[in-house]
Image 1 (cartoon, rainbow, N blue to C red):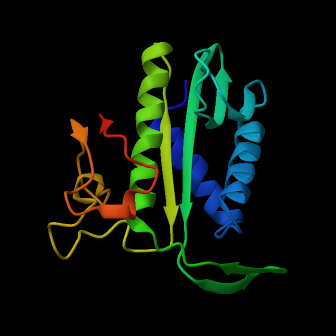
Image 2: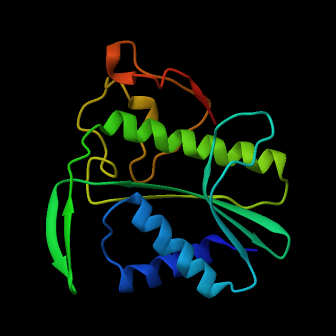
Length: 180
């Protein structure tokens, strides 16, 4: 079974070799590769849809270790950043749609909880990697459209989570209230 301590250790090791990623797919590949190296007997799969009901809800990384499922959901949201590391150049875009990024991350957590309900004994992990402090800092003003989705350090989310009343078109196709 993988624990939070194991995930912390894996992320620490990954940060030493890869302190920056080109994209979420790059992050996903690097993390899956490290899982494969650390747990050579584990089954490591990417973008798995575990649901038989026709729902399209993919798990970013699905590990199976000693018969236990470990789903891992990832988010990699960036702010504009240009740098070179080793022999690579990195040009990160500004993905400033914070309310949608938060919503999507909470949706990932709900997906992990649904998976755990279907597969008792599984241990799921959601990892949000960002160079944008708007995701981990406390909001300066209350009453924002995404107050229920705030994921800053020390926040606790419970119950039914929905958009604020002034959302308008911001929520786009993400209209479903999420439950934790």
